[in-house]
Image 1 (cartoon, one colour):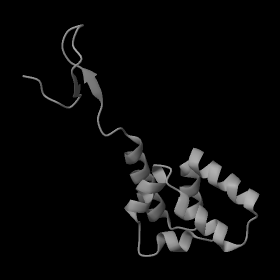
Image 2 (cartoon, one colour; image 1 turned 180 degrees about the horizontal axis):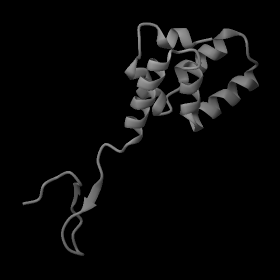
Image 3 (cartoon, rainbow, N blue to C red; image 1 turned 30 degrees about the horizontal axis):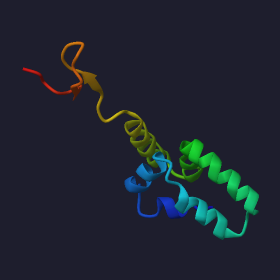
Length: 105
């Protein structure tokens, strides 16, 4: 139902990022405003999407072409990877933390 709005004009990477973070309010509001669901159904949808945002993405991609699905899944996988890992640096008494990608001379 809302897949066309999501896919209008191609992949919206900002929307993908928001969905990945569990910021699904825009989509829950659209579901609530559609008049097709009861309040309790909307609440269940809201909880489900916040707990498992990938289920919202899967719903939005249900009618998308194969290449769009692949692009979105690749982007989702990239968002699943941590941006950086932190490691302790120094001896036992050290409280210094650095990115794992940091070069220490």
